[in-house]
Image 1 (spheres, rainbow, N blue to C red):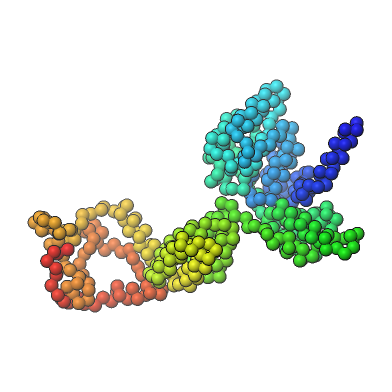
Image 2 (cartoon, rainbow, N blue to C red):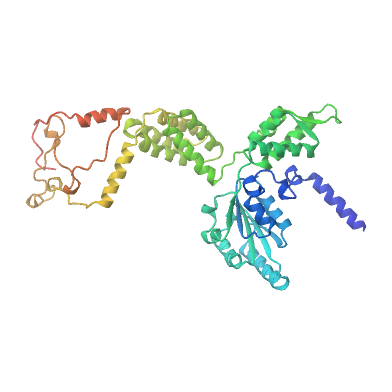
Length: 446
């Protein structure tokens, strides 16, 4: 009896010292903040859990959106045994032991098993494959949690045997509700500005919001003159608590932010381009990746409208290798500003795509005789180079002759725009001076 009382007291002390997010972990679906699309009165996840009909699922969402909480609530509402593994530390052996125990439990007692696998994307292919037979046969109900896009990180066979539920970042109202619960638990109050700041800096992460609230509350408590006074969290405490918050930047964010970055520059918005550049650098993105994308953009979206753009982008890429961060951020910023403010043209991009399409779809055709190599002995006897009109023989520097196989005559790829320098190129192409003889062709005929 004494040992039971001691154990209970020890557990109570541990619970009191637990992080705020752990102390506020919901005990029922009704307590969950956010995810109304899944947990509302007619939400699909709620209906499956309450009917104990949940098959294998993947919870996919950013940190702090409730993946682990939902897995535990499934266990509470289910008659099945709940087993938890972390993909960070578990091995194939661990998985096989869980499967063996699940088979015994099902055979001896008719009781199913739920395996909650946190960070499922950390499992390699062999580890994921080890789960397949048990999931497919129903020996295990798998609940996998991942912050990474399962279409990239989870094997297709395992993914196809699981229902995917996407958890969304918590909205401003959800975070406000969660923070106010935290204030009650911490026996504190806070200004609206402080709560708004904590919610904004949490970026949809409920656990992050509660963690920073806990820090802000501790700072406010230390600032009290009267130790018995109510703890009052001010904006200054909230700002101090969030100073070291890191940006969320998983695989999804990587692709979404680089997409926003490229589209901002393409849209000629240097400020937006600089913001996304700063966001990527702050999150630890590889600057060489950023530089490569700028080099591509210089030709794809600016092209001949400003030929210097490719040189600027390439110089920034070289600076990244030569200088390195943090100084290379300046070189990247200069390239972003140049590309964003440059006139735009995708004519080069469209031109090569159309040419590649013709190479794939149309007859290749032979190289015209007058364009063939006439340098080697015997080439002239084969007719190579015969009829070639040397452009430098003409004062205008050009001559009107066909340079393509007969099958491709008349096909047009490059259509210069009226933007920037490309407008001058357009004029040069459409208003060529007349052809006049200037000097004799070289004897080689090449």
